[in-house]
Length: 265
Image (tube, rainbow, N blue to C red):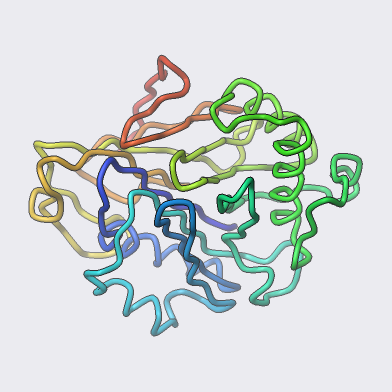
């Protein structure tokens, strides 16, 4: 089962704490890992078709003080559609009106059911259902002239795409982060909000504790989104089935009123 991770903050942050815990989710997802960052309209993606726990690159990222961004998208992969290869490793990127649109997916979508939605204007480099979903989304945004701020229309399109199978999605243009949870509640998706005064937290997948006030500046605020909660000591809220949340500048901007269902710790 693939796992997703995203950070969306108002100021550049380092992903060291969240990524430190997230990498352990690779134990059951040995076929690849990836992490996307943004600088303006351009994305940088570091990824490998190998297990994250065995990667020297991952270990170096954990200690890279220069690795910072307002938005991160991470993924560890269990190959269900498409062999383990660089082309099939998440996250994926396509150009949208001069901006990079980056996407990572958890679940399995039927390529046969997706075919009627794919015009061929945007072609995937690999053979995954996930990259095809990104192409379908980009084609629709371009062909229908849909703005990335038209959240209601995007939400409806994601529901349509979700009819093709199981789908948890993270995608971003570097300004907005979109997080969508499968309409049947597949696997799970949750978030936590971080702002000063920060709490002490413990990673669930590693015997590691941290004082967030030492990790974050008082002015930094934002959200961490993951398939499953990464920490104890802070509140994680579950997405509802079929829910879409959009984040910008460290704030949740869609929907206007977010239902809060606290998860058990």
